[in-house]
Image 1 (cartoon, rainbow, N blue to C red):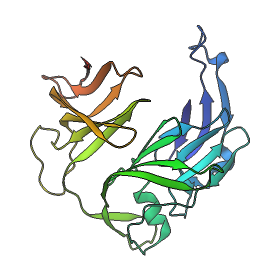
Image 2: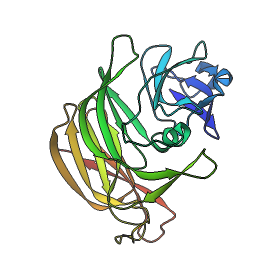
Image 3: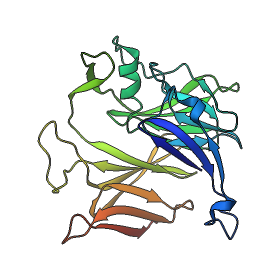
Length: 254
């Protein structure tokens, strides 16, 4: 399942049937236009499938503070969920909506979902009510809210403090994996205010929110992926002699 988006707006949704031998042929793909949802803000393409016609996406009306919407890509409709992290911010809703959507992540296992904010250390495991309208937080892995304020235009935001570790996540049906990023691009601890993009430590949680393992790899990585059977950990890193070259390391997990 692939979302094509442009400048924060969803353009189309494509279903690629990997179960067929000719999945690489475009005529086996099904593409659904999403132009009717032009009022929806979608700064990240992180989403999860709910059914053969709906997805849960980190998206909401352009001026809303809410974080999630259920999108029916076959009839181009969206149901916005009335939920956003309760961080006490009282400024423009659109600014808050952007803070909790920009660079955020979303994963799913059974009836549970994992959301991680891209601008602060905020991560929740949650479920949806039977009617799909309510977000119920089951476990807070982190809740260190981003510190930010609205810009004078009343539309955007500015982080007022950026320091400490960040996390690059991935998940399988069994576990949630977090690459702990605490180093800069040069492998050194960055100055306050500068982003942390690399790390070597991976924290592992089960879907009840319990930390079950910590792994340390032998080179810096920027992002990770784990095979669906939890057998292999893939780490996206850089060539030792040419930082512009990407290398992918594969590790066998216990």
